[in-house]
Image (cartoon, rainbow, N blue to C red; front, side, top):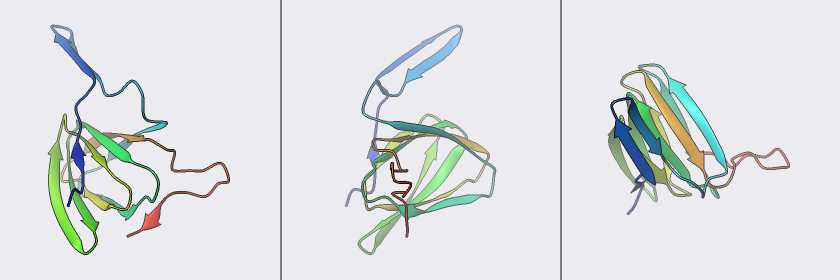
Length: 120
């Protein structure tokens, strides 16, 4: 069972000044930056419509995925880029301070104010 899919940035460039990572140049409509402190747990939900991708900008995150009675926990470190499909619940534990970029192919909040977020 595929709980997540590893993604690759569309383009990367590094030189003596630093590094640029172009995560995508299309395919996502909502982009958030999430900052979490060490020891925090977040998530505990799934989406019915939205595909959600995460890029770990700094730190690390332990993600527990679950679907159809199966679960798996995976640790993602700085530079990891992964996508979670609809109907896969996900909870995130932060063993250290962490900054994530979250991308959604379809915005979580709909025009009518309802949200594509369901408790696990």
